[in-house]
Length: 281
Ligand SMILES: [Zn+2]
Ligand SMILES: [Zn+2]
Image 1 (cartoon, rainbow, N blue to C red):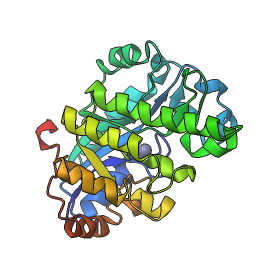
Image 2: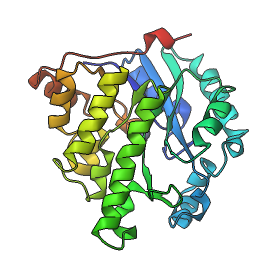
Image 3: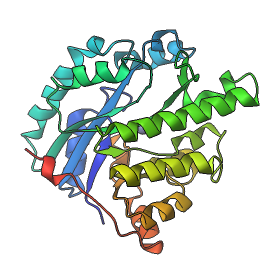
């Protein structure tokens, strides 16, 4: 069974365990590596999002910013904390971030400028938001039904969500792409819906040689892995490398359902796996 995880969160973003608690738990489980990937959510209009009150009540406004520069100095302190705690434990610890990718002018430029000074090992893209097609209004992808006035509105939010992920893949800056069909959590996209858009993501991964994950957090949120099994089968044909991710937000979720994911990959004869060993300093 896979004994490492590259996708987990701490109380720096929306997790509820500390950096040290997460690392300690991975050691207890006999893991050889843990990558901490707290969220980076920067969109120019995020502070006027209809969910702003919820974000503030949860304390997520620390990482929901309208400018990358506003993430400092907290983000550098967080990275330093991870590096310091890592020294105390017999496990390889990687520092990464899970980034929501947006497509308005200057977003990528701003992010590239920001990340060049960060002491990090890798980045993953994970889109939890969607926007109107003009990129101006940003909402949680899980709230599509709530903020769509009609079906066409909802369709546009969904299509924009998928096209943002495609552009994240094509950017070439991510070591892997998280939960490709996370939007199923919204209830607005079923297991087999938006097949063309989802196939486009798979083709983009294949074309760019970008890995992705099988995310076990879906078991809790939708009773299935992200992505759906039919997508994994298409990915297998195209030899797309994957990793199992727990997307843990608490120590009790580190390595959760890895056994089930292994069983499923075995059942569909998925052969293409990867690790990030080459990143360890
Ligand atoms: Zn995520
Ligand atoms: Zn995550």
